[in-house]
Length: 464
Image 1: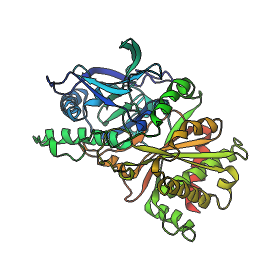
Image 2 (image 1 turned 90 degrees about the vertical axis):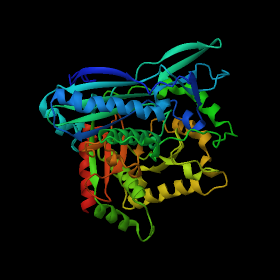
Image 3 (image 1 turned 30 degrees about the horizontal axis):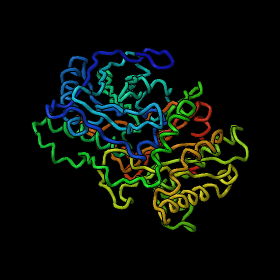
């Protein structure tokens, strides 16, 4: 396999289609999409990778790791069976066919087993580090989603698309990585994190001979009756899928994209909180981290002459499971995220009060989502219009959350050495710090020129 730059990074050892244990009573299961799911129809798949220290040879890897991982993945998919299935989306938004996730007994998840075969200087330590790495190198560790196809159902055409693929890559005598690519339509960050932790827990239990999987607190809840759509938001998003998908899901401009990870310890986070304590006495770590990244990004764009006095946008998601009426369980399977859209002009972000302005804007947007008569769904139907209105303006999306416990994902061979999202255009991911209690890791993808400038601004701002 080669990455987009044509560098031969990994060699395929095996390819598997992993299904849950056969249930003869199952023919076809349909899980209808809610408007929360359909909101992501126009966006490309997400990618992430976990790195684990585990020095072993190729033969040891195939016997000691791959065999248990295949078995435990099948058992995890018994509970998360929709991840084996396919999205079915009518090609005509006026169709009578309801968009859904369809699962049948012959469905499976694509699992690719590979071995790193590139230059050792670009291997395990390089790819799992915090320093800037070529984004294409990291993409060699995550698989492609299998191609979708069209089918005819009830004389109507539907698009049928797989939703998850997995790749396990050995770095001989050093460690291994597990890369995931998934459709956002089927799962938000919490759902996918719960699935991965379930798989890891089952694998760890099977290694020591335990089999009490039913007690895991990450097993999914599928009931959808609690999510109502009186405003017809789902139809708005479905129309947008047909109208905008080709324009929105376009390849990222061919630039020199690199990814790096920035770590903030608890003292640095407290230092940021102290900067706004007079005006905002009780502010969360998430808010100050987002505000700091946003202002550093604005200063980077200004320093490189990329922007003038325009609006700049910061976008992140808010989990609404506990905020719906009635609330739905934390282990709900699917998407229950609303987008928080923050906007300030360049001068408001780069000036002396830029950081405080950014924190206040984030608090204002969150307050508007939470404290209004319409609840957290207010303005959700204008989400696509917001994207269109901001086209051409600087924007940065932030994914992930320190609450997802990525670094507790132990398959039985130890906690991850590194976790990170994998981007090929502007993107940012937050996670808790592996080595700094109370700290944060901020994964960022920028062009190489922007990354050099951003790094200087980010580090200097924490010192000052």
